[in-house]
Amino acid sequence: MTAVETLANLSLAQATVTTLASIMIVSLGFLPRPSRAALLWSLAFLLAMSSTWTSVVGVAVGDESLRRVGLGLMLGAPALIWSGFRARRGGRALPWVGALQGVCSAVLFLFAQDAAAYGLVFRLAFLAAAVFAGLTILELRRSPDGRERLMLPLLVVSAGFVVLALASVVSAIVAPAAIGDLQLPRLLNGLAMLIYLVCATVSLLYFTSVSPGYSLTATAWPQFAVTASDRLRRAGRAAEPGWVALSIQVDDPTHLRSAAGDNNWAHIISAFESLITEVFPAEADIGRKASGHLVVVVARPDTVVREYVRTVLRRFTEMDATSWIAVQLSASVGWVPAEAAGYDFDALVEQADTAASTAQRLGGDRWERVRL
Image (spheres, rainbow, N blue to C red):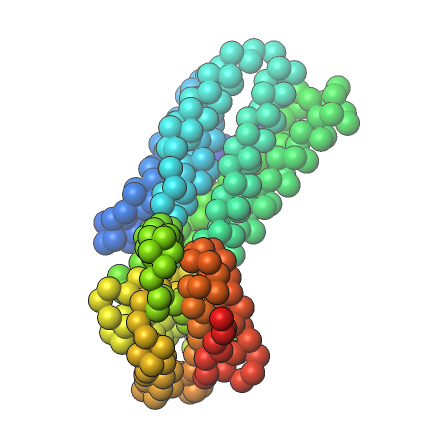
């Protein structure tokens, strides 16, 4: 099989995979649970699908310009995936970056006529796309789902994308005479994009369909942080007493999830969040910092807060989880009065998390309170 036939077959495989992945992301992810993030991820796969089929048609009819346009447009997909994660955490999504990336790459590919110029542009365009793969890694690390194992496929393949793009540019610097020889880079980049699409499909289907981060029982962290910070600032100006932050964490989540499996873990987290929102009053602000880790900001006398905490710990321990897991459930709580941190939200949450970690180290199923 010649190199041209190999690349043609690889392009056809990419087109087939992107078509199936697009159908899965839209039908299993976006349509059942529509959101701005899911929309951007769906657009990324639809862009990858249409651009790969454009390349396949270009190869089939022998039109090099059409093939280059398809290849260039496909490089906008990683930026759209990154935009989706920004939208998921409540930041500015910047979806136009993905469109600009794809269009600019396609135009540059068309205007690079000689082999050396095209070789340089090809490598730099993939490096630019890899920048957004690297930014996606940062977004994944900031995600409330940082402990989720199904995040790993996209995390690992994004890192591999960055390494491969850097290696391609370095090889051109080390051996500038071979900059126009793209036979190996095309093959490696084609395989990398194929693997990237498969791994991204696995992770994004998790984020759009089964991630506990989309549970409706607690507020997503960015929204919670804004609301709670504002409440604490106003309470601090008025010197209102009784405000506390509680960091409530499921004990030993790594072991628990390993024993329960992903589906049962999702049931446990859903029940955990439902219990907390049921116990605390309606005016309490409850935010999800990670799966199995909620932060509550509420204004109540110490005796009332103590009863809330006792109820949460007792009911979670007594929860009938025999259908999910054979391990005893328990949680730990860090309790910090707002005055101890000067009503500063970030400092308050940090102290509460530290107190909860201390409670876990002491055996769990208890609370640790920071005194004034």
